[in-house]
Length: 156
View: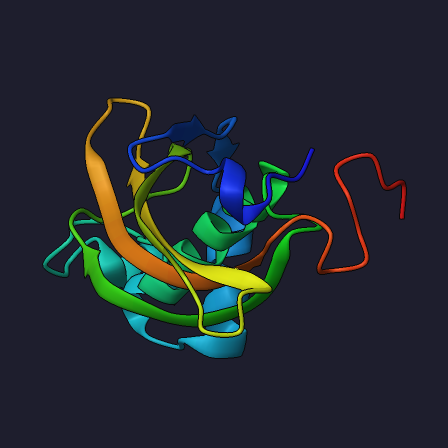
């Protein structure tokens, strides 16, 4: 169920279900978007600095965004994304890693148009050992209820 701007509270936290990375999807993503040996070749990556195959950071970011959207909290209330700040890849993601996203409402402010507000979401992605693998902040415009043409109860 979507949450509209006025109902988000600074400090509020949401946690996603887990998502496991497979070797096949890591390699497939790398072939299409980040063709570096550490993402493509299991054998040569064993000799590299990471001592094995790792997911592209951009693949990791895509999955984190997918987990955020799957929470459903902005499904009908997000007007548009404005940007991503402070993106950090803290640890490599490997085949078999299961990642969980924690999202905290870091800040919010009303826009001059008053139909929506700005919300900074602080995203923290952790692996199954609770090690932080990536962090970033997203800035999004979130509708105020009644301005988007949708409501909490909307079935669209």
